[in-house]
Length: 150
Length: 104
Image (cartoon, rainbow over all chains, first blue to last red; front, side, top):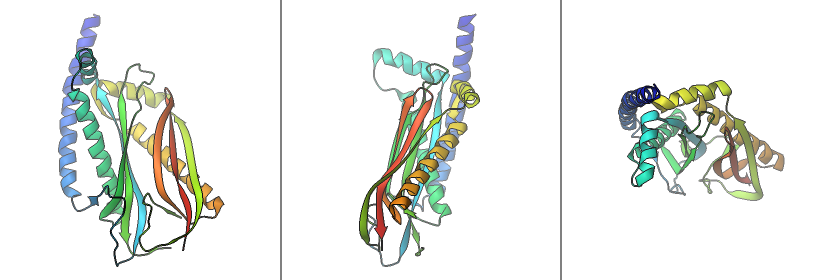
């Protein structure tokens, strides 16, 4: 009976997790294309410009959870070591999504450049559900909005 | 109040440094949301409840930092950084800090 539940969880995780991940990657790719004109730089200093600009702090965050299959795969991987591909795609997804949300906010302000972009990753798992694992990524930077305010 | 994570604001001059301004908040997860998140851990995907919770908490940390900077007499906070740490299982601390300055 226990083995049936385990197998059920594994299949559900595998099927739904895969579909969700595929869909998410497609959505990320189309949105990355859409926000191509919003440029994100990790440079600390914006180049000197003749037109007045106003800096605005923009950011985007996302929390992504792993599915049951990936969690099991990672646990098995832990025994022999090596690349944990199932977690690699998870963190990549979260990071690209966070950057996209930051760009979204920048565009809402009418900015096309974001400087000093920083990415912060923290794992917020280990809840009441035992060994659950989820990762939070926060991307932030300073968007330069044309025009002078205040 | 100008809040930015770059150190030099284009076209503006810092006329006075007032030291560090900081704001933090510790948030615990909602039991119901945590239960739903546990279910979500079977199929994977984004945990929207947590995303919103952390964003709200971060906004609050920034607000506290801005309030402190205002109390110091600043009109801008530059070089802002964020930091997240899990204090205990189920609670996270969000911390925002920066340099309070007076811009001309």
